[in-house]
Figure 1 (tube, one colour):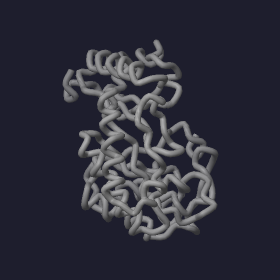
Figure 2 (cartoon, rainbow, N blue to C red):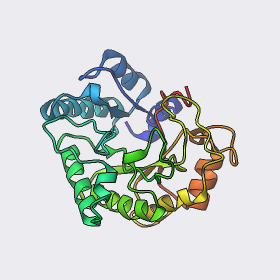
Figure 3 (cartoon, one colour):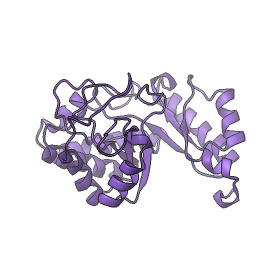
Figure 4 (cartoon, rainbow, N blue to C red):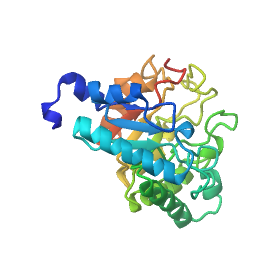
Length: 267
């Protein structure tokens, strides 16, 4: 089926990435695919046990989603390395962004991202929800920490840009996150409402601006943090952030995605 031949509801289905709780697609998931043309998948640890199992899973997803929608699905995963890793033990898993940047070698970061990308591609995963472009500006931040490439915009720009290049070297789509910056937050958007109005500064945009105009990842993930200077709603629901700040001010023309809609900051 061509996208232009889909109903409005079916086109909407193409805008969602959904998951399922087992190592195989559930009947409920397949009903979403067939009825609403849900065209994209996100994999978590509960979907993964081994390299072979993931390869068989993604083959099934490509076949069944392709049959129902006529569109190649995006099969995504959060594979940052370190504390945020979903890959099975029989694959190459990288250390955290902080550890990689700690080498001081830009090409080491690029090579690490390329290796991860090659691993994902070999298993049929075509989209990595990385790299983190947040500045680790608050040492008590419960969410970012070692996931960040550094405490300064320059560090995050340099090493985050290299990570994007590495994923693109491997032929993998990637997404910079968590716009407009989660590094100063005092709370965790997985757990509840997080207001960054008093801690956020425009310097948190610098890594995003530099990477978007340089390496230019295909996508940017918008966080569920609230920046009241722009909107009383979370950034992920805010035209002022996504359109005004990301599109118009920074000039991003790629795909904008939200963080997980199951997170308590929006639920």
